[in-house]
Structure formats: structure tokens, C-alpha cells
Length: 124
Length: 124
DNA sequence: CGGGATCCTCCCTGATACTG
DNA sequence: CAGTATCAGGGAGGATCCCG
Image 1 (cartoon, protein in one colour):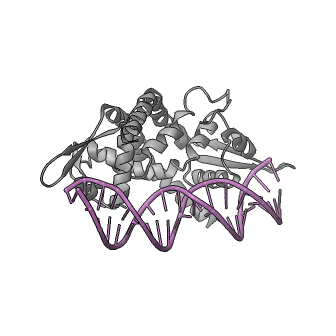
Image 2 (cartoon, rainbow over the protein chains, first blue to last red):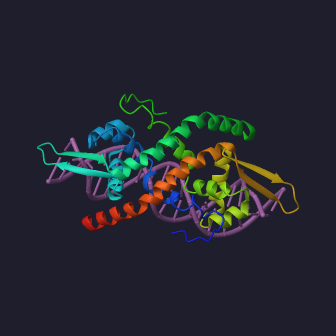
Image 3 (tube, each protein chain N blue to C red):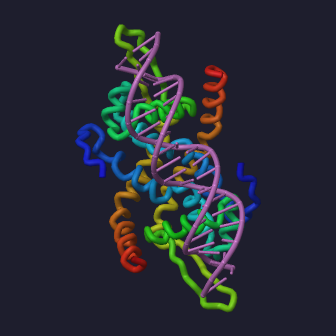
């Protein structure tokens, strides 16, 4: 999609970001990736760890991540059903860029908040 | 928000990402930042460049970015009104992490697509 | 030109209940 | 335990009109 002819900005930055954010920006996806970054997890473990996610959204996000090859879903045919989720190498690779983004966030959130308060005070 | 006690994953990655994605992940924000990364732009320039954005959403996203201190809005009191948007240093800083994320996306989108097709074929 | 205000419409999401 | 199915509400986003 987005067959544009922007000769100015077609160098590096523009194309893939919106698309990739639609892949991993699904509100819970990041937290799932982070949680799985600490090791494989079962469904209920994720449900408890992320805390705030509904069963439905957790399922949908896991399906989506699995569909895009970012996590694996392994079913162990135990008496109590057991399903384990884990990151794929593809997802491991994305953790570094995300970590850098998180570092920027950590540095900048105070400034962002300050700007926001200033704006809100100015506009009321 | 999210006053959690996850001793395992509270090291680096988890906290700020969802929050920062709510700041710059607003579907058009990234493209605005990218377009402004090539230089200051006027409202209609952005509207034409991004192509697909509605006037309303462009306005809202610009307001939001301005509110968070990521862009500046300069009004030139010309006969035809002229408003120029430009990145702040805060936004310049985020372009590097975003660029790395974009690089990962460029590398990985083929694999992501392949995984998706494989999944769709498997599940139909 | 650069928006603000309004309306309207989905889709996303949460809650709940059911299943293997 | 690990989901699926269904229903209902709210908010994101588009279209349109209007104004400085």
C-alpha cells in the first residue's frame, strides 16, 4: 500500500514504519513481546503478568503475533492443557530497536510531560 | 499507571513503550514526523503528502504532537493564512530509534509476510 | 489557507458465558 | 487450562459544513 512518489523522503524512514506498527503496535503486543522476552510463558501466566488485558484481546494479540511469525505456540497434550508461547528469532531481533525506542522514551518522557502541562496551561 | 511488581521484567524494556506508543503511534503521527523530518511543512503540504489522512485527523494528530512538545506550530499572519510545522529537538532525537525500527522492518517484512502466508495457508 | 464543530458510522474492546 | 462465541458500549476516525 501507499504507492507514493515523494522523492524527498523516500530515502529511508517513511515506508515501513506505519506497516510495522500495525503489526506490533496493537496495544498489548509490545507487552506480550516484553514478557516473552524474559522467557517462554503459558497463557495464564501472560494473562496474569500483563494485568489489564482481557482474555479475548490476549488471544487475538497472540494469534496475530503467531500469524506474523513473531511468536511460536506449542501445545503440550497434558491432562490439564498446556500451551507455551515463545519468541521467534524474528522477534528477538526487534527487541533491540524497541529497547532503543524505550531508552528514548525514558529520557524524554519528563520533557514530554512538561510540554504537555505547558500546553494545557496555555490553552486551558 | 501500571503499578506492577514484576520483578522479572522490570529491568529495562517494559514500562515506557506502551506509553510512548500512545504518544507517537496514533496512526498518522509517524508519517507526520517523517514528513517533517525532511523539513518544515505547511498544513496543506502535509495534507497532500500524507495522502489518505482526513483534515480532521491531521489536525488532531498535529495538535497532539504539538501538545507533547514534538512539533512546533508557527503562524505567519499573511493575507492567505500560513502555518508552518516543524520538528522540535525532542522529535529529532526520536528519529534515530524510529529509523532503527524501520531498518528492522525493512529487513523483516519479507519474513513476516512469508510467516503470515504460511499461517493463513495452514489455518485457511 | 487552516482549521473548528458537528454528525454519523464502524470497529475495537470488554464482559460474560460456554467448551474441550 | 486455554481458549471460542456472542452481545453490547464507546471511542476512533471519516464526511461535511462553516468560519477567520
